[in-house]
Image 1 (cartoon, rainbow over the protein chains, first blue to last red):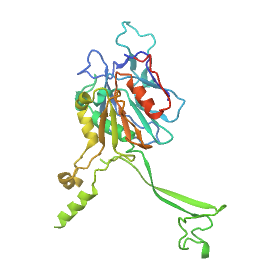
Image 2 (image 1 turned 30 degrees about the vertical axis):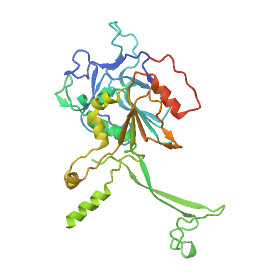
Image 3 (image 1 turned 45 degrees about the horizontal axis):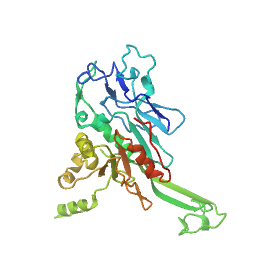
Image 4 (image 1 turned 60 degrees about the vertical axis):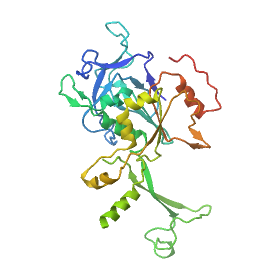
Length: 217
Length: 125
């Protein structure tokens, strides 16, 4: 799996333009990020909605591009960088990851449909942060929407949302079709889902997916 | 009378069923189950049962609790007796790993999924 974490264990993600002035006015290590929009225009967004997510002391993840099954759910804004607070240097010469390279929440769906999500800040799930008033440097004080984001994120990871469910399966011989008359039409009784086929039968099958599950609101 | 019947029907049909399509057993692996239960208590509560009252289901809210319905269990990574598979079947459907300080996490996961490998863990901080 192509997720890279910073080589030194103490690195945090810092942003001087999107931080919470109430709790991290000097250290700037609590990020305030808007809920993500859809990655591509034709892809459904499960994690949207309004509001700011507060991520205290997050860890940056960098995703490799070798796997198509790995996607960032929440990317950091352009002005973010990964920083080791123990380092004393004034300027960081080569930070581990910068800007929207940093993925704060990444997820992967394997070919057997199993889902794996990495959330960069476990503290964001704490009670204290679920209902906290946060204020960006340029905005006004709002409540953090961590709770709603946790709901959509766990909904995705635990296979509640974004799951195709097969409703109905139909199969029959391809020689039987809708608009023929006589023995080869669908009017023939018992043509559907027979229990036995013979070798070299041509079979037509239809799957009807009943629903694409979404968390009820 | 009819209302009572309707309520009874609704009660029977709402067996606590998780919204997840793959099962409702969630295992949380954490160093300190007691502390983390407190720290994230709202999060666990949301997972175990979440009722969002809306005009459409106020009648249900009054009598039945619909939940996301996960059954949570908390374990420490040092627990040797933890078995993710038993008799070829899964014992839990979802796993959540909270950050831990111990090296036991890697050992635990490898032991569960590849019991034929013997792993020596070193060099992790």
